[in-house]
Image (cartoon, rainbow, N blue to C red; front, side, top):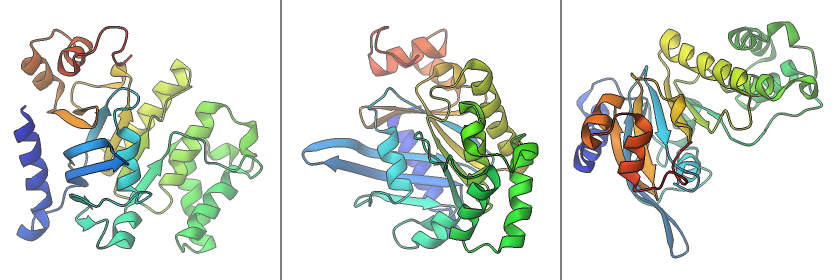
Length: 269
């Protein structure tokens, strides 16, 4: 898939609301961002349809976290357009962010609170009443397999279990889109597989749109939407079969190396 095709796909997604069709989960169109004289994102466009597990694949420093900061309004996008389920994050930030769940790379739970308390605090920030919040917390912890530990303090959990609580917390306000930034960093193989399985299950059962940022090629599945971000530019957007056909590579690792022009020592793991 060419860069032009990638951009036209994003533009088509952003026009859904105008034509009355169901909006995509996430549409990023022509977004650039700079820190001083350094441009870290350059005309980035991508579309994540509902019910899609999209992998944002790139080396450390590719611009993945900056893009997430723009989507979540930690930074303001002064160029292009970002829509969450049809809502522009600049023009209607409240409506857009209400439909967005986020799991950041850094740890964000209060270790001295219980699992339930962490989730109830998040619910309160979203204006959810205590009774309803408790019900949602029980459901969310059941989804991630930790319902029996609701009253334990977070500090007693392993890294993988804490990450699962963060996923549960991201579901409390019932979003339609999830962003996860390097969600498996520092986890052992078993915990990584558990976290990925939980998120893929949410896509399949609830039809969520997921943007999963990673530098780990082995987290890609054949049916995923793959977006390759390198040095702030989208080099490819499509499925694994497409990236193999485009590059003539035999596997995803070699395809990534060919697309980005990186050496074996620098490429994604």
